[in-house]
Length: 205
Image 1 (tube, one colour):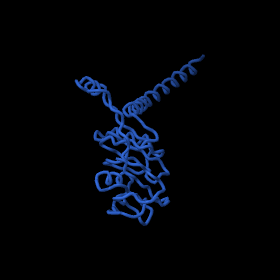
Image 2: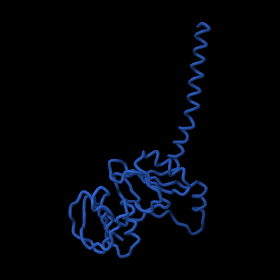
Image 3: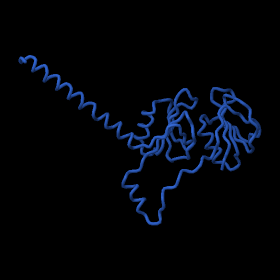
Image 4: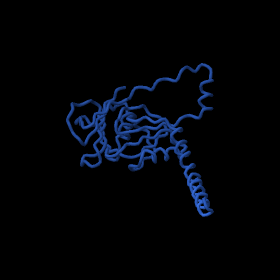
């Protein structure tokens, strides 16, 4: 092997080492974010949004929550779902099965979990509470509206309004592309009418 070949080989090793040094911080950051959140594919946790962004990737949604100390949970709704986007939440709402969504909940720091476990009188971690609403996609339940909230633009916000009102027994959310868009709160569960523009929610408890 002549001197020219040796020099080229050494330079190739130096270039490879430089590229590896640049890539390692990004790889460790991604791994850190994955460890920081417990992901729940096919699960939504509706309500209590304090920030909403247009459709981004799951990874970007998770990064936005990780960068915000206020954020405890995020929900990513994937396109082409009409709710597509990233929803940041400061509490951990009840889980609801939803094939369009992936939820990420911030894990507790090990020392915090250890302190909680060591407190006297504390039993095992309780199981998640059952959902408060049953969703019916493509279903309208017309009639018995006592409030029409035109400014509500997300299913989660509509459900939160119903949840916060003891009078509300059901709601219908009409997507923003429909002329009748908005959130309809009802004090009675009405019969089913098929309607692709709607999602109905029936209070379970």
